[in-house]
Length: 226
Image (cartoon, rainbow, N blue to C red; front, side, top):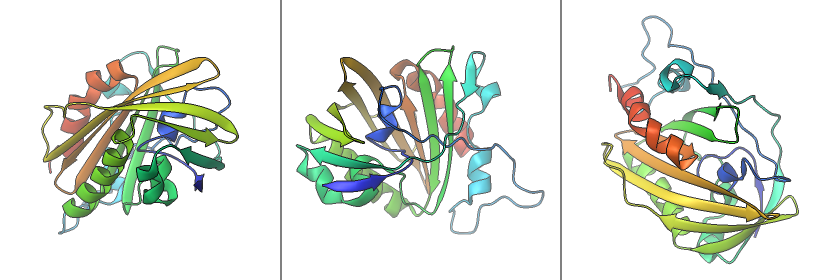
């Protein structure tokens, strides 16, 4: 299967951040509060992008040592998924972890301590059923294939996936997985945890220790006032 991949939230290209020769696109969100008198939250509970950006963690929330990851021009590579029919059946960007197709979204990326450690937070808003069905389908497909391979921009990457116990962080539904990406003798381990709270979906990805450290704080800020 060959598809086009751009920015990523959930899945393969999200964890190619630190691997050499693999192009990525990181999209940092600008943290601006909603305009006075506007909450950005319509009657159906689905929140607009401005309101979502205001709910993302920023440097003051994370603490010292964290820097926003600079935005890079979008890069689109042909990606082939090998050895995981369930991912291939999803089709499109979803099969390779492309940006989720929910109508309202915001994202922020940070590096830590001048090292290769990174953390990414994404917020999406849609109806609870659409959020639940979309994330469940992708997580089930990815964790259903313990090992597979992707070829991104001509670079083969071996992937192993492991389903993790759901975090006890709250929300209505939780998903978590550990992904290991190996190429050229180097490996990157990424933890990815998703929590749905009503019509809001939070996804925190990155170095496992950083995800564990900031997950509760990210959920608290994302759901404050909901």
